[in-house]
Length: 303
Image (tube, rainbow, N blue to C red; front, side, top):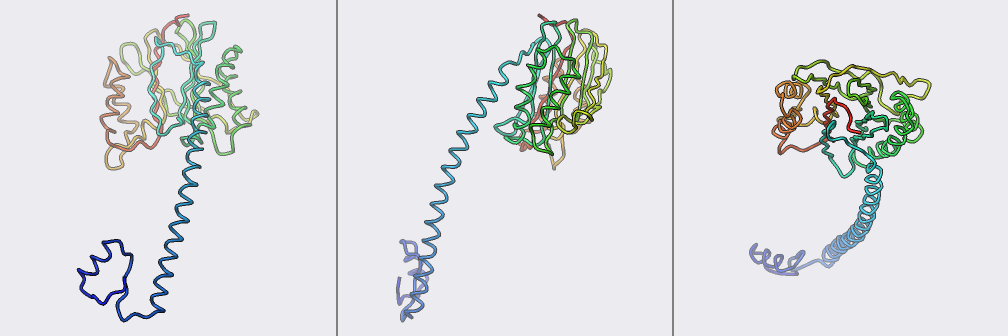
């Protein structure tokens, strides 16, 4: 607008009716030209921004298509899992589309049950780069009748070949024999697990003895396992650090002590009660990492 009116109400009315600027009479042509050029630059920037937004939209659509394809591939790789519900209860809560935590289970023809619980560094698609090859390998390795240490060693060997340096998988690989009275564990990098007796007493904290998978080469890798004699009805709890690092109030974490207290507090339905406590403390808080909890009950395999 070129106007002689100086009242603020008139100028507000001019701008609110669709004008972008005004200049007062008498006007200087050079000032008018400068204002026009300034608005032309803004118009050009808006046009360029629209073009870039359209390009980003296309890229995002392509990314979503690729993620969907990878998700189908990942789901197919996990379909071979054979979870014996008499032995295994688990909860998984991913922070994004791709879960950086992993639970695999396979029952061998000899009755032994093999379980892998893993936590890849990071989360999302980056973590899936680590968990996907493990999901593909695990079932095939179990079928080959390898020992638990050999399974861990072969997974480690493949990861060191496939994934970039600096990426790894914290994991516990477990084998429960067919009679349900002997448990073998290879554990690298996961938090300590809890072993409870049938009467609810804490028998032992089972600590990780190794580095995570994908760090050491074959010559450095230690495939030794812990072997414990369990009784029917014993329960073991394995979890990823996303559980104990879940945020509650004032940037405080759920924490190992609170988790331990929850496990010790309940005898009946301990698994469900612990999850209820976790939800109670974290409701309304942003989840920053994948959360996994697994309960293994020691009893003969139904084969």
